[in-house]
Image (cartoon, rainbow, N blue to C red; front, top):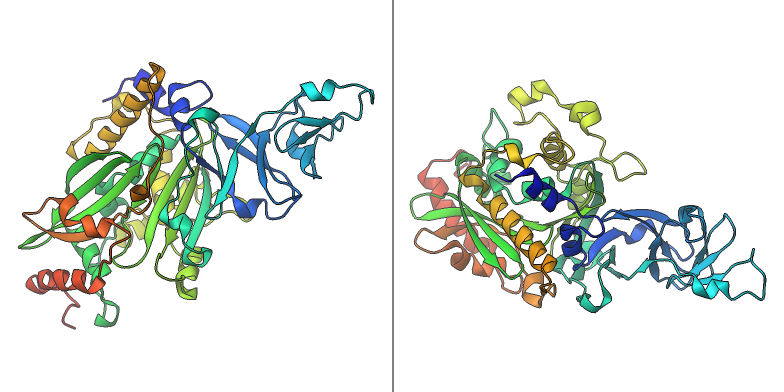
Length: 450
């Protein structure tokens, strides 16, 4: 259980706060590249780590992230003119280059050099993987851009959605690394996931069967240079355990178990203020482009949320009780809410904008959440006391994966799953399927021998 002071320490990320200082040691997604699609296109508001900023794509195609308030009288540069390698405030015409330097003051005497003394705050930006990344920390501590696997594959191999959510970042991060809720919140009632014809029966449905039948996993957590590797162990039959492995990357990135030999998933939670955050969901297939059917499923299915047209806000939210269907809750989905993201958002937003963790009663299934909180507080306090941290991420981190698989009972999960967690290893669906099949045949699971 945390005190209210601990909760404030973990959840406040504005300028000058200990947790804000920790976040500022890492590159953060600021917006999608497609939001500023062309040179001299319209500015876009960006709120990140408690700061109101404006993003532009300059005349030469590069990006810039500048303070929203004009240094002159505080008018919003969102209304500014993006022109000739800079942005001009429409109030008095002051213009700022992409480095923040004021380059023109048309309402001041022509002979004045006052403009040379005025500079707006500008943060470094880089583009990678369809995202404009920003670094808000001190220049001397700036690490390399985090080259995650999903950001290195061609655009045709991935699908990405940015969502604005009204709750503190931390309760959503904690949902991402809490594997025990999946069998409930994202589960079904009234039918078995394997009651399908053999035409559609595959290893992923088999693993979901193992996941759904054992609703009380045992958790094992390994602290790593990147954060935590969290293993949730369930019964996998006579000789195996079924493991769902989640990678948590400091400060707020989660790699969620994808499908065997198929889709990989990564979640970014980026604080806007203390009571809202941006959520980036990325699904990708490293080996090949997404098929039209897969892309359609991502755009219209339940893995990525349905957004209000022209916005990053979900159609289903607290204002409409997430359009919960009580009849569906009785005989269809466990929650009665459509959409995986919406189901997560429903429970995390229902905790309040910032959940009061001093009233929690935690159990053994919360081990990953507890350890993540401890790591974050330890690092922030280390910085606060004048210490240093290494925010550089080496290549091994970027090629981690979060598998769901069977491992022999006498083998530690991080050893038995080592090949499946390494993107540079070939992990065969046929090998995994050969391991799953005997378990299902032993249990006479419907559909296996259809």
